Length: 509
Image 1 (cartoon, rainbow, N blue to C red):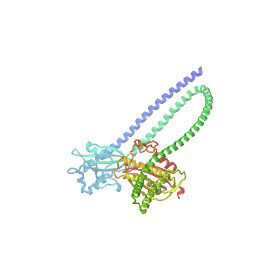
Image 2: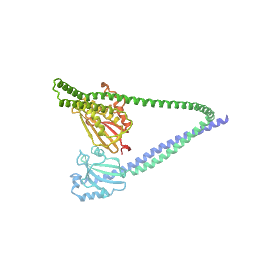
Image 3: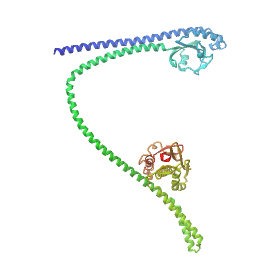
């Protein structure tokens, strides 16, 4: 019991001593801060007072030349007087007071000032009489013409921090010239730095004292709890160890379930992609059937007309051998065209997992045979600019489906917006190691608020026309996952441009 009382008393005395030391050190620090500020302020004010005396003396000496005219007029044609006064100003130049010069302002509305006198010692720094220049902070210079009072401000250049002091020369209540002195602020910076460093050292010592104080208090506080908490921690560690063993078993079980779930989801995703591709193919096949019907309409009409003529001539006994042969050949030609059309469409959808060698010219010509007549009937100009006929390896049928889909989308946009002089342009070329095909139109482009979503599945702007929203999604999937390329879109001046870019492979070389 006595030991506990002794320890409590010693702790109380220690804490009280620490608090008194803390208050004393804090009071010393506040006094130091005030003294530091006073030293810097006094030093700066003494410099300003010194410069004020210098410039006042210069102004008094210059007043004698401005009795009947301005200082500029007095100096204008008197180089000897200028040199004499410049020499006088040069007396005040030191390493600290770098420049002393006299300027006036020829035009009150402008920010330009005019050199009258310059006491620079270095010839390269010296300005000519009457030379115009705009100071770095013209607002502060212009302020003197309103207040007619001296002012000073800090500024920086390559050589360091400087203070510009400006004293106005006043005649008849007007400012007729300015006496300007640039002097180095290095002395104040050095003084402030030394005092700041001293204050910083004081802070470090004070902080160290506080840290030691709290460390000792902390140790004494934690020492009382250490023994009790030691037993508590050991018990908690034992429980935690058992819990970790149980959690480890649960985590292993969850990992197995997650692996199984990921495998199932990947499988479902692949199945979904296949379904989307099949759905996209079915949608394109529907459009193809429409194109076939359009391609067949004219040949069928011609066959019907030729057959009717053949039948009429036969009934009237006017069918001669040459006419029968000619009309039969016409019918054979029309049927051959119908057969070729079926072959083109059948080849278009033929599934082939192997890459084949082709070129953009071959691909576009194949697609043109399917859709160009349809575009012509709708007065849509089809422009082909195929600069590169180099062959490369790719999935040709899948690439043709993408090209056809992009052309059909452009056709729909042109018809929906009723564009005058509509056109679709195909531009194929090679750049660096990539084969590029651009499909563009003059339909006005894609709205900026949806352009980032047009490649998303089931996103469609043709909902009123039974659009599935799969065409561009599957086109991007085909190009990027099957053809080792990219499909992108951007708006140009006249419309949208879709760009297919396929990387050159080793097989192409």
